[in-house]
Image (cartoon, rainbow, N blue to C red; front, side, top):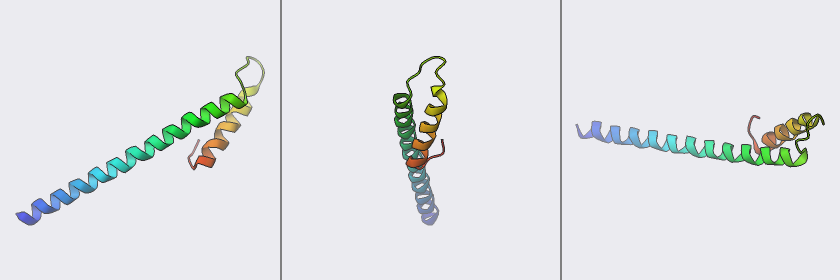
Amino acid sequence: MRTICCSLMIAGAAIALAAGIANAAKGNRDAAIERCIAEAQASAPDVVGSGNSTRRVAVYKTCMAQAGYRP
């Protein structure tokens, strides 16, 4: 019985650790998204009919790739 309880505690700790790592990775990606959006908007301000959206998309994709994430 003691072995089973010990095994369950270890399994629970491993699951909690994995969940914590996943949340941290999501937070890092969210921060990269915010940073890349700001960089893209700064490099090509939103002017209606200017065609800057293509440049903005390219800047965003490049920024995300450099951060190590899929755009």
